[in-house]
Each structure stands twice: as structure tokens, then as C-alpha cells.
Image (tube, rainbow, N blue to C red; front, side, top):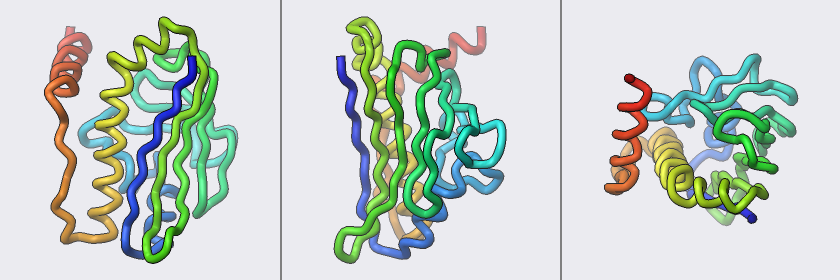
Length: 167
């Protein structure tokens, strides 16, 4: 089965600032990843090809990195990424007067993993990515007030997962 998931936001503002958000991923001053509400992104060294880590139970390593443009993470066959053959990436492009920040997942998996993706992982992933895009928007445009809201299913999944980790 194929998984392809895209989140993007067109932001009116400085390309350098948006690119800096991607370049700061997993660093001490990471302003893109919503680690205050979600498991933080952690790598075993600075953002560079070969760095390994992940967020929560999702494991991956940096397979490509073009500072200011794109960082690609290849899923490791462990943790929640077990059974995903593919990658996810952030990229910064331009479209007219907007800077486009995009996150894409492309992977192949079994039918069973695909069901897990559809029912559990994708809703949580979508909420996390929208929170990250909100953070990017707020960094570039401090008057931004259109933050995303978690739907009932996401709130329920978070409740269940939080209870499981407390026991």
C-alpha cells in the first residue's frame, strides 16, 4: 500500500526566516517543531546527513540535507516506523510573494500498517504538522491568530496514548 501525505502553508514573509526554521529542526532553539505539545524531534547530532533520531516512537535518520531548502528523513525499520519503507521531508520553495513550507511523507507499507496509518498515525500526524505550520506562520507573522484545532478523534487518541504512557 502507498502512503502519500502533504501539508503545506504559503507564508507572506522572509524566505530566510522560513528556511531558518527548517535548518533549526531538532536544535536547541527549534522554533518549528511543536515539541511543547508533541514528542520533540531529537537527533543524535546536529541536523546533518547521517544524524539519527526521531520523535516519540517514530524513528528515522537524515538522508539528504540542503541547508535553506530541504531536509529528508528516511524511516528506520523500528518503533512506529517499523514497516514503513520511505521518507518524509520538509522543503522551502517560493510561489509568487509567498514562501511555501511543505512537509511530505512518501512510503510503501503492508495493508496492516496502512490501516494503522489511517486510523491512528495519520490523524495525529496531521494535527502535529498543522501545529508546526502554525508555529512557522506565527514566527514570520506575529499577528497570526488562525491556529489549528485538534478534532475530537485526535483529542481522544492523545488521551488514550497519554494514559498508556502513564501506566
